[in-house]
Image 1 (spheres, rainbow, N blue to C red):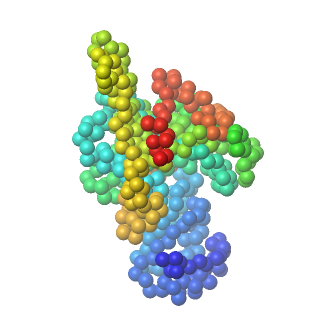
Image 2 (cartoon, rainbow, N blue to C red):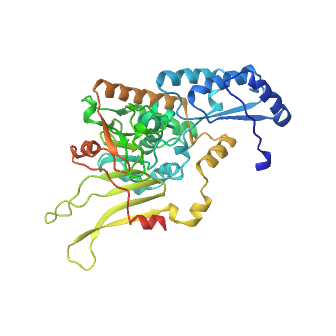
Image 3 (cartoon, rainbow, N blue to C red):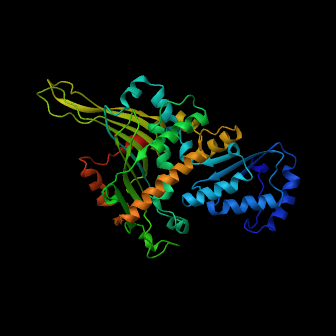
Length: 415
């Protein structure tokens, strides 16, 4: 395979450089039935590259084409529309594969199977028994070498706009007609169309943060290629509501941040309180957690009578650690191996559609406008911490707290 790879160096912003590329490619891939174009560049360069490929006659109009582009699909709603229109001049919608690598993760792909192939699970996921839902994506890393890009983007546009909303739409969507892309995308869009934010001040349902120095980490504003006066958020937490059965009215809390104390992405579903009988107080809450990474698995926290006692209760964990099984680790493709494999198979299930991307941007733009109008504060937080204290207060005023995804101790997942 390695021997089939070739490399050509050029400035993709200069149209005259494409003439050399065309001649270079003519000896290698001329007269093929299908051509795949993969852009691992900033969205601002999509239009430039496509136009230059077209003018230099490298876009093969007579052959089957596939375009793979990386998120974010634009910098905001307006730029996303402009980019999509430019791409649409040269590629049909069914030729455009919009990559969100989260959709290629094994446990995210498993959400629909977990929900719809298990009667017992489907019966639990509704507004009659669920108290609230949390989705967490925490990273221990900082901006690394991406300071210039990240400082123009922030956690809201980088993570919430794509990854977290994609995960949420799969969790809340109704059963699709089939698991084919068009049917799954249709139900995802309906979820996004029914997400709501409060009419109250954004300060009451949103928290922004920016990491400061701590451990071996620099202050974000001291990072390479970051504005020393930057007000870009590296952490965001917010509360959403959903307006469609079976999850109607359930509070949804999202949070994501860089330089956090732990690398972990997971969904936490906490159920409403219950009482065993008149002699017992409120039982510990049941919780369902879907661990997306770096370790994958599903567990349910339930209550039982403690063995050897008369009426003492204890909490146990019904746990499935998918990544603890060596065979699963061995047979699970990496995200991008699956992405290219699906594209070669013309399977768009793990890619996102333009209506979804557009709806995501519209929602995020509305949230950002509310945050600006209500002057949401930017809280500092120490690197490798759990984020700003204000994020804990966001849930505390609702009588809730952020749920940790640890189950049987970290050593259980590390061994």
